[in-house]
Amino acid sequence: MELTGHMLIGAEDVAATAGSMKALNPATNQEIEPAFAFGGAAEVDRAAQLADDAFESYHATSLAERAAFLERIAAGLEAVSPELAERTSLETGFSAAQLQVEIAKSVTQFRQFAEVVRQGRFRQAAIDPAQPDRQPRARMDHRLQKIAIGPVAIFGASNFPISYSVAGGDTASALAAGCPVILKAHNAHPGASEIEGRVIRGAIEDTGLHEGVFSLVRGGGNEIGEALVAHPLIKGVTFTGSEVGGMALFHRAQQRPDPIPVFTEMTSVNPTFVLPAALAARGHDIGDGYAERMLVNVGQACLKPAIVLAIHGPGYDAMKQAMTARVQAMPARTMLTPGINTAYRRNLERLANAGAERIAAGGDPQGAWDGQAMLFEVDGTRALEEASLSEEVFGPAALLMRVKDEAQLFALARQFRGQLSATLQIDADDYALARRLVPILERRTGRIVINAFSHPQEVSYASIHGGPFPATSDSRFTSVGMTAIERFLRPVCYQGFPDALLPEALRHANPAGIWRLTDGELSRA
Ligand code: NAP
Image 1 (cartoon, protein in one colour):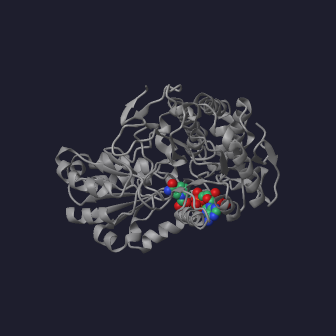
Image 2 (spheres, rainbow, N blue to C red):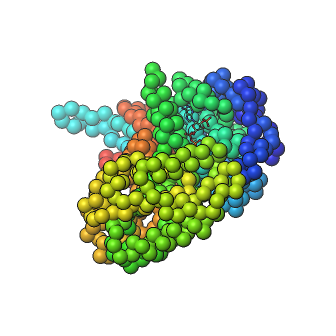
Image 3 (tube, rainbow, N blue to C red):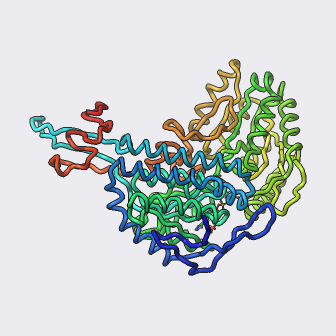
């Protein structure tokens, strides 16, 4: 596919109105062709008008039609997989092999959401039939289903250039819900974004949908993002990135005359608690497995286990030595962008200034934007005094907290802000302690993992990629997994409707054959 650098607004390729940029290869520090167009508020307005025009016809598609559209996107991504992986590798420093895995994840997500649409359970159809003879007051026929909230703005993430970006889970779940999408492409991978965007546009053309179902815009500063969040035709926003950026957009949306939901996924250190019996029995293996996991993607992952806590005792030194050996053996590797690399270096200084001791370093940086692996240690007393030690360092660094006793472990657990995940390493003799720790963690995290290393998120019904603030701005929802669709839905009750006027999901004969709650009982009748 030839990259043109245009924005994709509906069916139109739109040239720059506010300057342009070239992608940077962070491994060589060289720019890559072509130039990518920047737009502003006018392009956002054009895309939003088209999305609004598209809403009614797209929302009215049958479950089968919408599922076929999502499957067409999946097939389109498969078809461009080699060139998408190659271009993304140039723009991110990630290997093409690793990116093939990410593309496969995106393909699977679109197919999974196609299945979610076909099953129709996302409508959460509920029927409370009329009770004309009920005393003291008759009950009217009430029927409820969930419908799409309207056109939404999605901010592509920098760190997963496919599965959390243009063709990522946010786009898949929004389109599955019936929401037209305006994608704000991340400037860290503009070529990858264009390839993914053109696949989605191709699927729209192939399935005969309204051109406004998808647009891709790009900008050179905050203006375009702010214009998107402020636009009166946009009815919801998703974002993955920094806490500062996410909260700026969240507050902007709340200042609108008509505030809209903003689902931000921002920051998490995913603490790992190594309990005493596990530490004594498996200290070395835990340290080795932990360090391997925290270095994945050069530590640029929302689920990176950034902090490990253990009570000082048998096995502690073996764990520390294993972590040290892994970190020392790790060559410096290219980080995603100059900005992310600069922030990483600044955060390493922050840790040292806050009282953490540097106990291991990986190979020296060779390229301009290489991130050097680092391991720090701090004692629990200092960590309690200095809460900033519990904040995220985005990159290949970890902090080992040497804890005095159980009381200090509980105090540290209570000090963490909201998290995406927390992990326990335990053996059978740790169960009593784990039972006391889990309720503390439940209040602070969306996911608790036992005996794995902040395991990658499954895309499934039981998965949660969310958690209390600042992990996200709304702990009731997930951005990964089948229930991610719920961010884009709202309930509508239809009261006293004749069958001929009811939406498909609520008709008496249940023509779509979906699961419905009738008088409180689930059935497909
Ligand atoms: P970011 O700076 O928050 O930017 C994310 C996206 O939001 C970009 O498209 C950006 O546009 C836009 N944006 C940010 N602030 C905005 C504002 N005030 N108004 C309008 N648009 C705004 O995140 P990033 O570039 O991906 O990385 C920066 C830092 O974020 C990293 O160093 C890391 O600390 C953190 N991060 C965390 C995670 C995680 O999962 N925990 C993931 C990614 C990044 P522009 O690029 O045009 O500014």
